[in-house]
Image 1: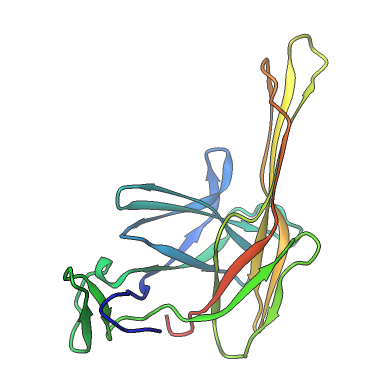
Image 2: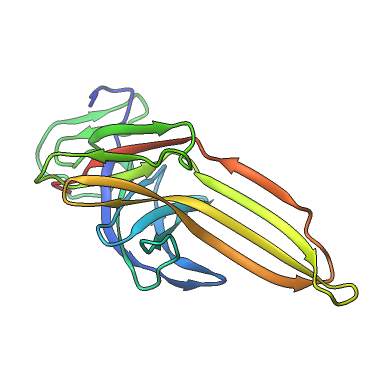
Length: 223
């Protein structure tokens, strides 16, 4: 961790547990955060978990996370532990005594009373479908993952239903999920979205691959 008057380190804003449920047409959970530039780390020891997307309106951020069973199917009623980090000036007091550093604009870049993001490792790979990520870590520590981007595949298709002027439109999204053991981290190919509907307007068939991955593994033992 670098402490100076120019760069701010990400500090823990909150630790929150969300429970997945049916949200619109998807199963997952929204984590709503007010902040400057928040990021989230997620973990579960019972399910594979993934962060599918983020939306923003001003200082309001919504993170959509999902949980999956061992066979890669969506899990409802699953708990996901989320660690929210942001720049120190986005956090509110009390700060108490300690070392404080501000930048030239008067924004707080560091305060010793805060708990800061601790990066353990960077997991990378060219194609998670051919080589799922896996790692082993020391016992007695707790870890979470931060995805750098959406990792998965998207398939859009349309076929004639058999009725004149009617089509069966489909949208499928596979996504890379992670689960922690006592000392292990493992990945799985999970079905995040399965949407099949009839329509009078056919989809344009498309396929997208976002299969190279980059995940930060962070130590959240004391957070």
